[in-house]
Image 1: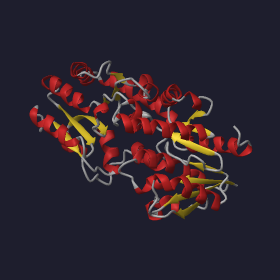
Image 2: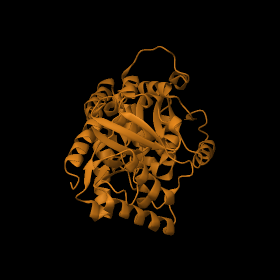
Image 3: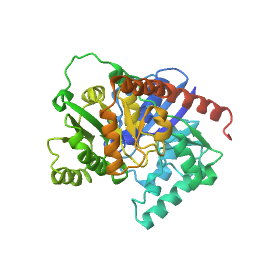
Image 4: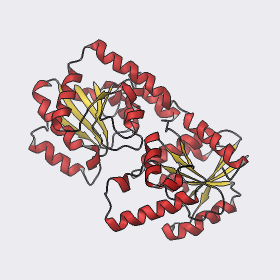
Length: 377
């Protein structure tokens, strides 16, 4: 049996890091249901671990002290890993003990916090030093896309011989919801209320270019009389700014912000949308584009960073995330024939095969077997 200690504290912060929690669940759920792996999930809040994991034969919940902080992590996490007899320590994100005392596998979803300069110069320098030390101590560094792998290797050459790409899949339950077109039960929030619409899902941080998307829709509005724009998600820091922009452009009856949409309703929004659209300029992976393709919703995106490989040639490209270019692309999409639109749907269906449920767990299992058989690899 392969015994793995896991930093599972992200489950207690789902609103901050849903993608990381999902990534971890999609590894633990299939492998923890078998007999080859035993995962010790280290967390100060065991009740925060998804119920689907708590009773699996290969999952153990190991409580950490509530007062864990970055300094105490360096001592508590390795101590807990050794206590459970783990053969290696797995972090589903880029933070980990500097001296774990056993082989270390860390995950880098993106390094936007260094590339986008959202931190002060001092905090950015400290974050870079911490990440450099973590990558230097790691036995393997999981990157969720080839773009992220290149980005990490460019900034941290010391990790070049340690990186491995594991695409994120969506998990079996969410995959079934996205592909199930059964009309019952009715969603809590009905997409029918919005008529024909372009759909965006995600936060509203500046690098997502949602402001430009709204401005582009405004520029195209006269030529899109039957279409609305639905923005699902947002975040506390940036949503007020976007609401002000929508009011200033007099788009309150054409652009809708929907917060706190449940998963079932979200799956129906994907299925009912005319197009999914994102003008994001930086993505470590890009879950929403994958979700749209699986739900047979054609994708419009700015083909940069990971979206080049995630959406591939299945997306209608926004060549520049400017309002004028976005407007032209939205008009082109709306004026497509049914046959042309179906071609994008079919291309998305083929592309989505890269992200079928279980492939992340299978790749992780192969990595673990190699690591356990030869800890120096």
